[in-house]
Length: 272
View 1 (cartoon, one colour):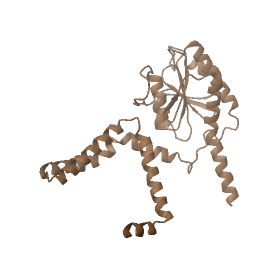
View 2: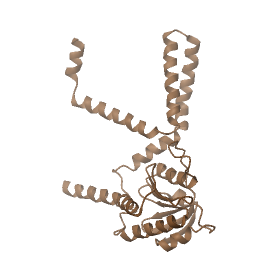
View 3: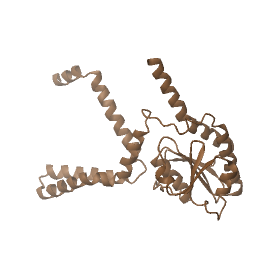
View 4: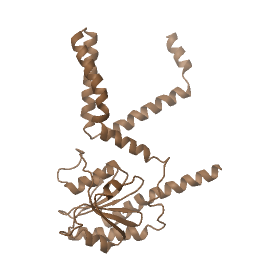
């Protein structure tokens, strides 16, 4: 009892802060691996740790030695096995509000861009034309831009509609937009392996979710089978959007970085 009271007496606000930070880190790790294959791998590691501990308590020397060697090798293999999750974590850290990008912040008026996007999306939906349009934000998408056909064109509904007409050279793949320009079309994107996506979703939707998992891109995807419009952001797919909802999501998504940057500079100016 005296020892417990002594520990409580020594407990400071910094200890509470330390516990809170560690708890938050574990919480973010759980969110990061949730819905991925890493969950099953983590369960396997936990089982190995439990069995190794039991073998030590029960003095099963041979089994304990074998499991200890397996765990040592496993620690070396973790960076390889968890490479997608580690990459995603580092990318999210790099996209934190301590860093800023100005792809859409340089665009003073997003209204015309959003209008052209919504107009084109409605035409795609009405005529059941499959489309996949990616908005680059903080994370650069040059690795995907290089897989497509360079365009460097102004954003217009007519150009986008013509690009996704079936059986044309630019129909397959994704169109990538940077700022107020279409930088490339017919680009290849990574496919998501998330088990939470419906079985009815095809390659186009999985590519939209995949690039939103590996970057902070905002992606519009139109189903060729149903004509439904969806938006992928942060690995989440919002489906069956009407014109009003699509406009709101594009407005909020594309102006968010601009708003955050202005707030940061305003706070910095006041501090000075």
